[in-house]
Amino acid sequence: MSKNRRTGPAVVILAAGQGKRMKSDLPKVVFDLAGWPLIRHVIEAVKPLKAARTIAVTGHGRKLVEKAIEGAGVKGAGVETVLQREQKGTGHAVKCAEKALKGFDGDVMVLLGDVPLMRPALLRSLLTAHRRRKAAATILTTLLHDPTGYGRILRDEKGEVRAIREEKDASPAERSVREINSGIMVFRSDLLWPALRRLRADNAQGEYYLTDVPGFLIERGEKVLGLEAPDPDDVSGINCLADLADLAWVARQRILEEHMERGVRVVDPSSVYVDRGVKIGAGTTIFPFTVITGDVVIGKGCEVGPFSHLRTGTRLKDGAQVGNFVETKKSVVGKGTKAKHLTYLGDAVIGEKTNIGCGTITANYDGVNKHRTTIGDRVHVGSGTVFVAPVTVGDDSTTGAGAIVPSGRDVPKGETVVGVPARILPSKKPGRKKR
Image (cartoon, rainbow, N blue to C red; front, side):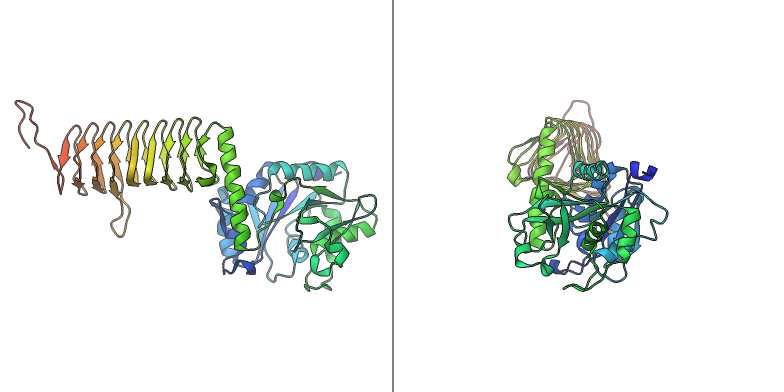
């Protein structure tokens, strides 16, 4: 066995198809699920395998797919791309990666860019079983109550895999089989490439099926395994928008379960939406009807919701609280600071132990550019205050209810401003001059 086979496999991700049933010009693998494009979920699942090479086969909407790959990390997490100019089936797609993998003699794992919920542990199990049994190919399968639309796994009386039959080519008896091919497979590369060259498009689809390769290997006496995935969601693909919605639900529940295992209280998981990649500290409570999307970091002991929307770039420091109908975007909310009602905080940096009154708005957009509002520590912001950015509010200051603080009219430390436009309230302390 080669050194490559003992270490990381080469991974080929099939991401060339249009996905016509999505009823969109967008390539299917760039559709969003829980904050990431579908293909990024696949790339993240691959990372723990420490693959020797990872190659995505692109086609329809190639530039959009490459952009989605780049979003998966530094330089696309090391993912290379090759182009399938004509979509001639899964076998042809894998063959497009042959030239890029010239000289690699290890195992080749084939994944699908529209199967987003596969777990790294399942992929490791697949690879381990393949190597332990010294198989030529290993197919990840699962059992479905309704296998309609999927290729069926055909086994002999000993339970050994004999073939994969695509539904359109299957007999009525074969269509009754509930074990299906997930499309995820591992091959010995020295056997894969010659078998791909044998493929013919003499089938109902007129395509080159990757699923014919195991049959070729069986014909020459090679061992082909079928490893069953216990959870069908792990290997479920997305064919239409209804599938996308179904798997998004599963993804959200998994995400919330992971947070709860780390000490985050989610009061009603059925009404909370949290994107993958959001970080939440232990002891934080997420109340119902809360949406947390994008690059968000929440500290320990915070309270979020109900009816809050935290958007990308939000940072809540330990003990911060945001409540009913509060929206944040690219904002830092300091330690122990509260914004409990009807507030928009966009492009804002807020210090510690500040209270943001009901109806406060940081007006960050002037029609062309976004600007920052900076609010210090221990500030009391009166209800209905509007900060027209850019503006700075000093520590220990106060704004009166309904104050409009114009751009450039900073609030000095310790002062109180009121009115429209906001002006400094004269001090009543003896011996102090009015301003």
